[in-house]
Amino acid sequence: MEAGTIAAVIASGALIGFVLGLVGGGGSILAVPLLVYIVGLDSPHAAIGTAAVAVALNAAAGLAGHARAGNVKWNCALVFAGAGMLGAAIGAEAGKAMNGQHLLAAFGGLMIVVGGLMLRGRKGGSDPDVHLDRTSARHLLPRLVGYGLGVGLLAGFFGIGGGFLIVPGLIAATAMPIGVAVGTSLVVVTALGATTAGSYALSGYVDWGLVAWLVAGGIAGSVLGRMAGVRLAARKNLLERGFAAVVIAVGAFVAATSL
Image 1 (cartoon, rainbow, N blue to C red):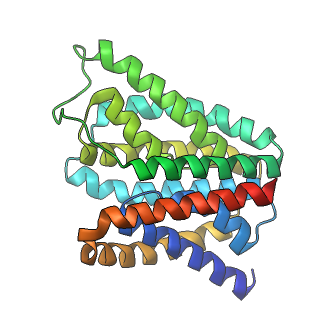
Image 2: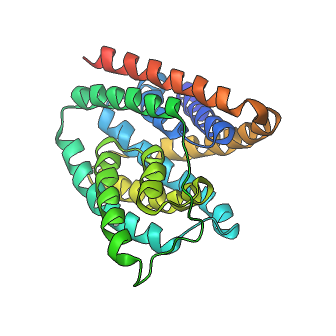
């Protein structure tokens, strides 16, 4: 691997990590366009597979802190993740079967939708004590399975973590507060990312050398992002809206160039 390519991968990972540390989510959706247009991966499928591995590793790393803080509803997470893994496996097979340029164009369209959702903002639920047991399963289980399956299909198809869909899905299904939903979502992101990555890896669509450098850059970027986030906490809403506008613009560029 050439030095210029390694530098581009590290810089891309650092940007993703910085965004995640600064605004608390959404950065991973930049992974695929960065790998295609900055790093220069020829295959959109390889970009999706490689990004999925990095997404799963980043989510797993972030999960530990939320688990220690008690921000993970494990029963809800495991049901949502189980249904999501089934959806991700199906979605990944469908994505691999699609023409690469058409898949990239669809990914650009997804980015535009995601940016629009980010502009709307996120509101949490009102039930911090929600939990899945025999009593609550009757109404919680169908919702968790339904949302999990739908999100998993999209996550597998596009090779994304899907946190921007998982968090509102968990809130809609259970009415848990947003802080708990974010922590719980990392269990699901890890599971869906691993499922998608495994499917793409079996088809030879993961560049493991790129994964290592991408994660290394992401770790450094996330540290800087968290530091900047502390200083700019009062402007978080403005930062999130600015990032949403960037996602929409990049999505439009990806869709236009692919078509």
